[in-house]
Amino acid sequence: MPATASRAVLRQSQFMVRRTAVRHASSTSESASKAGEAASSAASKASEGLSRVSSSAGPALNNAASALRKVGGRTGKVISFVDSMIPPTVYYTRVGLELGKLVFRGQNMTPPNLATFQSYFQPLINAFRNPATLKNANFVSPQDILARVRNANKKEIALAGVTVAEVIGFFTVGEMIGRMNIVGYRGHPEHHGDH
Image (cartoon, rainbow, N blue to C red; front, side, top):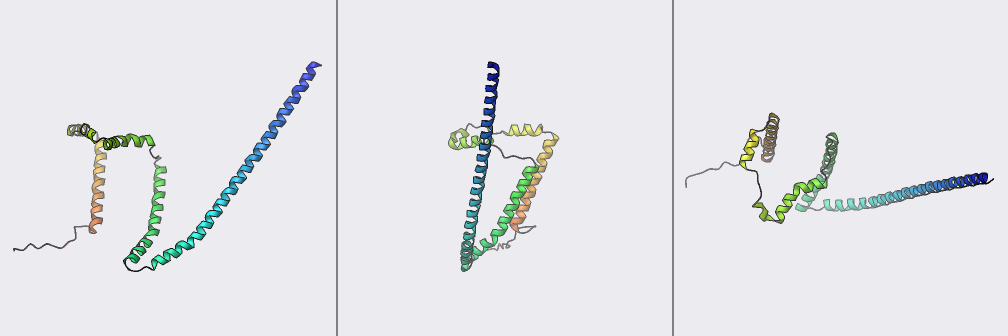
């Protein structure tokens, strides 16, 4: 009899453990669903508040912008110029950001971490903190540069050539844009007369 009683007690305790586990599981899922409902409710209230603020701020901003457009003189010209530049600036900023995202994803690029920034900029920061260390700094000597050029392989020479061509090309295009002319600088010829 004692063996059957102990089996009955064991079955009873197993039943109680299962029932308690089921209760806790159901109460956990209920509390999780309540938390999810509360989060979605808070998110919907926040979006409603944001839409109310933006809908009330929109007409106020439009009224201020229309009042500024009525200003005359030089100030009015500056305001109208800035107002005309806002849409293309926003557009090209968005285009640039999307292009940057595509390049980053396509090249599998990742931004450097903080340790990399610190390793590159720490010597510069130290030089600003203690300028006397610049006297003892080991700069690259001309002999080191000459030795590196002599020991360069074909790939390094080709890379250097392409880089130099790119720099010259960008400089030339920048000069053309700055001059607003392809051939030379605009200007008035100077007359040097005998005095």
